[in-house]
Amino acid sequence: MAAKPKSLRIQLLARLTLPLLVLVLLDAAVSYYVALHYANTAYDYWLLDSASSLVQQVKGRQDKVTFELPPIALQVFRWDEIDETFFKVESFKSGFMAGDKALPSPPQPMSYQQKPYFTDAEIQGKKVRIVSLVTIPPNSTEAVRISVAETLNKRRSMMVEILMAVVVPQFLLVIITGLHIWTGVKRGLKPLRELAGAISQRSARDLYPIPDNDVPLEVHSLTHTINALLQSLGAAMMSQRRFIENAAHQLRTPLAGLKIQAERALQADNLEAMKLTMGQIKNAVDRVAHLSTQLLTLARSESMASHMAEFERVDLKGVVYECCMEWVPKALERNIELGFEAQGAPHDVMADATLLRESINNLLDNAIRYSNAGGQINVLVRSSPRVLLSVEDNGPGIQASETDKVFERFYRIPGSPGDGCGLGLAIVKEIAELHNAQVEMGCGPQGTGTRVTVVFPVASDDVRRLKR
Image 1 (tube, rainbow, N blue to C red):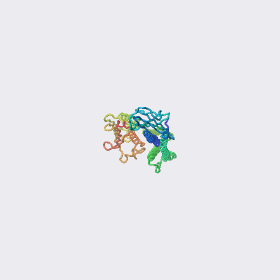
Image 2: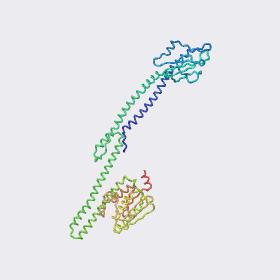
Image 3: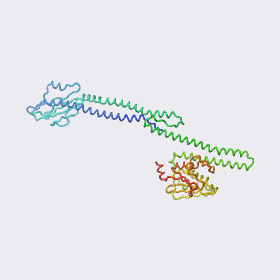
Image 4: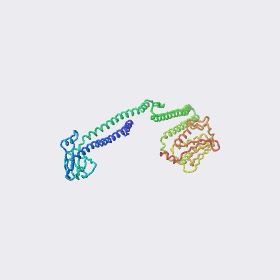
């Protein structure tokens, strides 16, 4: 099953909003720990002040430590609307002296230290924050530890207030930013929707360029690509239409002659006249068959244009030699000497063997068709420095002004002999371009006649090109 296409809008929204959400969540986590730190710091100072006030109540008398706190002072010390406060006074020698005996003692050993010690613990099933101070009162050598604890309600409330003050505006900012992103993405994709709508309303024959005056700069690459495709399609359709018109025109003449000759054959009253007419019918059928073969070759070369990877290594020397042997009888009919020469080895090219054979046959057909009787045709295959095929004759030759025109479809030099259809060299050129080869035209060795050379790319280079 084909994969479901992904929405560009969803991808843009995800890529824009997800990092924002992750950033907000990270900021919320940082804000939580910052709020916790400052809440603990603020209330730790309060605990430290409370513990310091209790330190003042520790007295040393006659080498004995006492702790005295009036009931009213104890009531004030413990009063709190939100949290519960606990304290504990214990001596290094005597042990527990006053306060809440259930309050856990710090894990560190009781020793004299000037810095307060903060720790978290639990009393009566309630989590508390504890600060401990160790002091040695005047007139005494006995160390006393004072611990003050408080539940965490005020700390939590303060932390929640800080978080609400920080996180709520951030989430509101995310919502507002998300709405703006949604609107921006929707507006940004609007030109694409309008472009799709404009293309969907077009007919199959409307290949005019899409106007891109009002589209954003980023969409220009898309419209330019579509317009280039439309231009290529228009050129291909025009070429196809011109090809069909030319083919129909070329077929009309031999078919009309074939019809006339058939009518004459039906009206003939003797065998000799009928034989003459049947010979003319055969010539017309040969022209039609030759033209249809040429048209099929053109169609095959066009269909192979998108399948270059199907080319295989072909021995050019062997294919040319076989084609030359097939054309020897035709050359002998016109008393033409057909020579073949191959220089160097190997002569491998990356090609479609059938199309390559058609190209060689067209070169030989043209050379034999337009050479003078008793003339000479030389076929050369060479592999250094480039693999090439050369076919030269000593016929009337082609003027320089006609060199480019003879490669056009259905073009024939005015006054040229023979019954060709003007497709031979056009087929040679198209097949050569399909094989990334070059076609060169010049004069024969003595400055007369015609030489057509097809230069092929090096096989190894072509293999690398095909792999890419």
